[in-house]
Image (cartoon, rainbow, N blue to C red; front, top):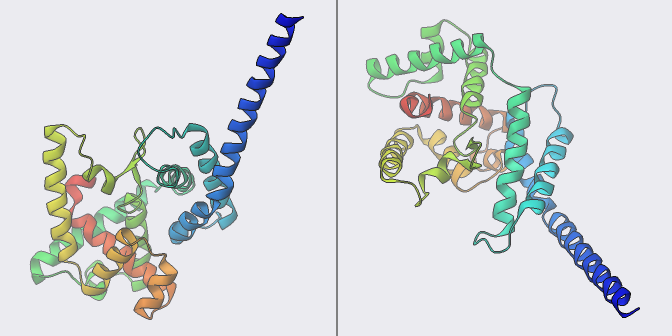
Length: 252
């Protein structure tokens, strides 16, 4: 009877530990649901037609659940930081699946970046949208559409670019664990990125800083610039396109 009692006690302890683990994971998920909405709000302007906000929220929640299942408290990074990457990765994966650029779209982006590069050499400065549209003989509406495609083709600077490590381009640049060659490449990219951002027109430069470094949602940025949210998105897409021209050898 004593042996049986010990086995029952072990099972009960095991069951309690399992329930405790489930409760801990559920609490992590419930306490950090706001991360999902933060990421969705930040990436909503990249949402293609046919994909609504509910879809992005669902993908984000899946990422949050995966984060709760895989998080190890022994690691130095907080759960919020760990979950943020997982949530964003899950949403970005859905965006990639839903809006993979066609061959013709990539061709349009290539023509656009080549045009901007040529105009910059001719003018000695970043060309305006009007100058780009005139050279390509297209309307501003069409140009803004291609700029959005260019932005989607890189999926912005701070989205996940390394699926295996789930790190972002900006985070890879500050990774101190990289080898000498990677550190050298990172330093070169950092210098090129800083130079490219510095050469952006004032509004595009401000948007890149507010969106990618201060992590403000596009709605808030529009309020700061006193423009519509759609116009803020256009300016962001233009900024990313101009950066793509400067950083093409790193991003291609």
